[in-house]
Image 1 (cartoon, rainbow, N blue to C red):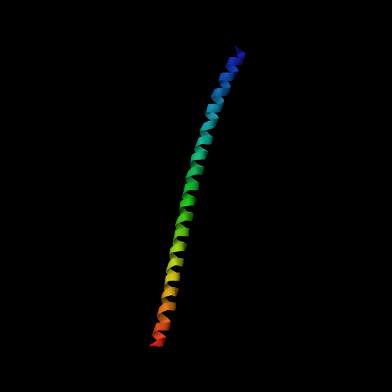
Image 2 (cartoon, helix red, strand yellow; image 1 turned 90 degrees about the vertical axis):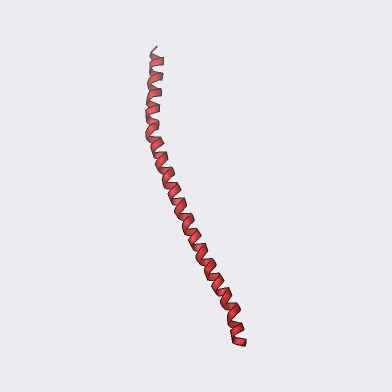
Length: 70
């Protein structure tokens, strides 16, 4: 009887101990998603600016010699 009572107490204790862990997991997951999203947006911005710069350089390399010849 005592063993069953202790077993039930332990179950209740574990159930209540899981609540803060679940909240911490939710907060950690939200922070991770936010950081990942911010990182992806910054990488996207970097690639966009690099692509724009490469297009500009390519246009200059093509147009400048043509203007020089004429």
